[in-house]
Image (cartoon, one colour):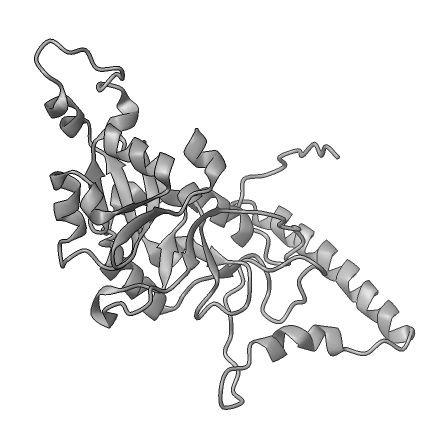
Length: 280
């Protein structure tokens, strides 16, 4: 269906309108609860989120749910939007991928389940989208999808605990993170990238010296690696008078717009993107 929305006030600035909307939603919610109690329904459904939040030892800890009052039941069948506040997750992402301070992971990462300590998938949420969710304190918005998936949990076997990470970068969110990454990035020529896209998995010794030296560097951790096209390597491979088939001055290359997520094992480098993306 198509929904047409009318903007009636600035988000977070019109206190009177916000109070009116909150009171209206609270009144409807009370009527719905009173109706359920009159029909003999229990409060087990309202207690379900609290049960899910219980940690080891029988204690429970509050989970920051964006755009929803604490203890309020979310829409049935729709997962809540939960901020990822775990210092352990933030620290290992920054350490392994060398993510700079130009992006604040502590306020921009979220997940769609209540297990925010070690979520399966992590999404990046822009400041504008976050303000929209925070401006809906009663949780009336049914958020079907939001954010860009940037990390997914996948651990490398036999990896050095001091140089490993429980999460890999997802291709669809790579270009959000790449400008801020200072580690786990390997530069390559267009020919080497084409070879990997075609073969999907190549042994380390099959790459040319520039790439092989980077892959065998002890500082490069086992697990997720980003293979990035370097226009300088492409230009150096051209003989004098030879014309390049691509425009090396294209701004997309300056912004790091040609990169693929890979998985580095003991002996080989493999693609993490699907066949459809590789064919593009």
